[in-house]
Length: 389
Image 1 (spheres, helix red, strand yellow):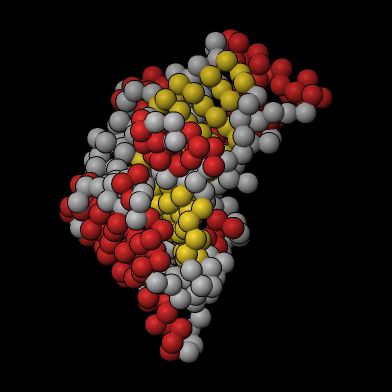
Image 2: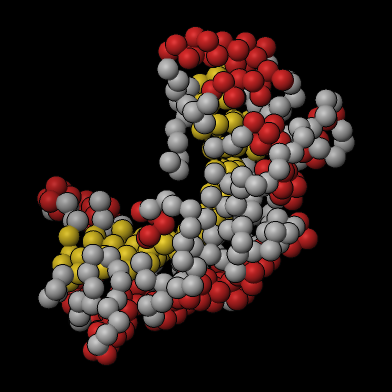
């Protein structure tokens, strides 16, 4: 329920203000302020279905002239521009400038999400405005999302045509002020090159939440780089880390990573690693009693979520202490066998969440897991869900 800007061929329309809220706002000044805050908390500018529709700054300004102080969240969906003729380029630049103007009007915005479809289309004005608001300490949460990846989960993408979003991320990471102010960074991109990855590892040490989806690909970054611990700066603020479809995030490299981020509370590892990575041997019996293992050097995570892992990856990740463990895997037999091999797996766990299973399957294999969980006093709940199908 938010204010939404929708670009049409001729003008900008403001929608999303609920009629019921408008009516309730007529009761009193107090209700009016509350309803305005709720109705216009989010501003969405959608150009994703259009191509080079011209727009006017005045029309944009009129859309938000009464509500800029209420807007806390801005979502910008940018479609593809048509390259020829030259007038189309001018229209695109005017559109980007107008969107940057609207963003600048909303001076109390805390979160900005940018969804791009054309990674070569010039978004400099938008990027400059976003960077200014981060440096000012207004915007604390940034998301840069490839609309193509979000809509189509195939394994390969063209990495040669994303200069603009890479430039935006680079400008943010190169700014010391921005890195000090940023609290949440979400990245869904086709590619992060070596320079960007190094900046991401060293600069934003005030981040509380970091999400990287698909950007760390096997043949685009040197194998040692992403999880070489000397490359990661210490960050006592980071409490939530999510890695999705990152080929370089091998299970065995997650153990030192979790140890590195001592204050991390939630970790999600989904569809990471690569098939050619040879399986690693499980830790030897008695490993949890060794002084330098994770259960003995850091507090347990509050939540560990694993999705789509092989047996050896589960055994390796089982060295991570966590109060709650979610395993989103349809192969319950695999989970049961891993848990029956050793009671040392997933130390400190008091709740295990798995996907709901078929009744006959549960009757056969579920009992194995239930016996282990009862012995270890772990609650077994079949209420997990697949986050990234």
